[in-house]
Length: 198
Image 1 (tube, rainbow, N blue to C red):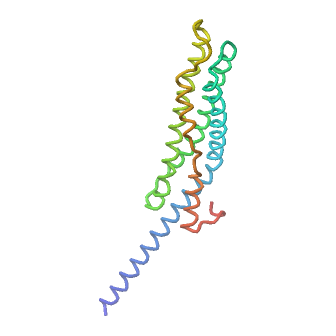
Image 2 (image 1 turned 120 degrees about the horizontal axis):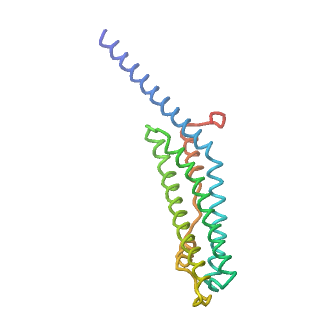
């Protein structure tokens, strides 16, 4: 009789532990989902900045690669555009950095929440690297425009090496998917999270 009671006690303890683990997992998912919800505006702002940046840079690079960097005032204008576009890369990267820091700052113990976070971190990291590459090429090109302006030998029909590389990078660019939305959607679906919980 005592053996049966011990067996029942073990089952009850195991059930309680399982229920406790599930509760802890859900609490972690809710906390992570709250952070994602709070950072949606930063993510959306970064997306908008990045799309505008790429669109503007494509048009600008296309004109330069087709016609050359120009002479005189055109070189000054191109240097100014390169500087403005470089600032835009910094602004977009800053927004992404805020999202990434918030996501990285979550202490996630559960396998599922970590598996949701990993693709988001990967995308944020990849996007920041791309923006850093764009910024470096823009700054390099801006310097070359100024050098062309000071050179009497420059004829106006060529363009900085960085513009050619930037043009290739921009042609290969594909707009990123909404990784934050996907992560939030996965958490909501798995744990049946309601908007009121977030």
